[in-house]
Image (cartoon, rainbow, N blue to C red; front, side, top):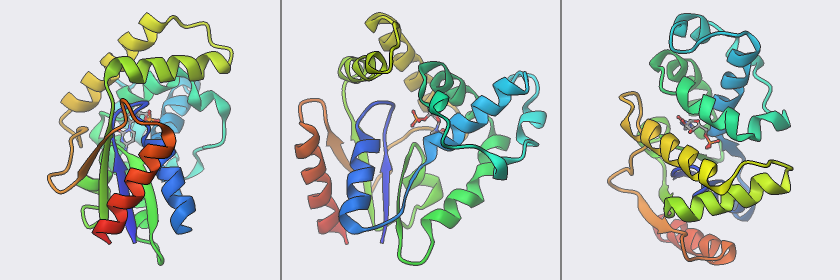
Length: 205
Ligand code: C5P
């Protein structure tokens, strides 16, 4: 069984994807981490993704480090949304994600283009959303617990900028697949969101 979970930043898609993976005993890939790792690599190599896309795409994508806590920062999230707009970067990460999705036994993947590009054949496709204000509030609280002093307004501005970039790019934009099922987590608890997600998967598999 392949489960695709897409949605914007801080919508709750990662939490839902992890819970589904636990519930169905499936491996899980947070594909945003791949783009975050590329962004961190680009920063380390002091490359400008706008001007040196070829050099960015020539990086060793097999050697990306996905466990670094720095990948979770807001700066890296913004940088990831810039490098991820490059078709060459997306192409370099495509097969790895497709292989993960289509491994024997199935998988859960979350990201922006899982249902549309990585696994259009997924058994269940979920699109998770919430209002920008609510997503910014969640992200702000999460960043604060990690010692960040970013203001709520800055987090909201960043979320809006990232939404705009992710939705308007021409390479695999953030868009709900026509056959995906929407979960609006704006006014749902984590538990209720997970219950809803499991009910949707049950109905589609
Ligand atoms: O999900 P997360 O916030 O970690 O993703 C970071 C950035 O990586 C996103 O803003 C998006 O630009 C990019 N991304 C993507 N395609 C995916 C997952 C993430 O373009 N499948």
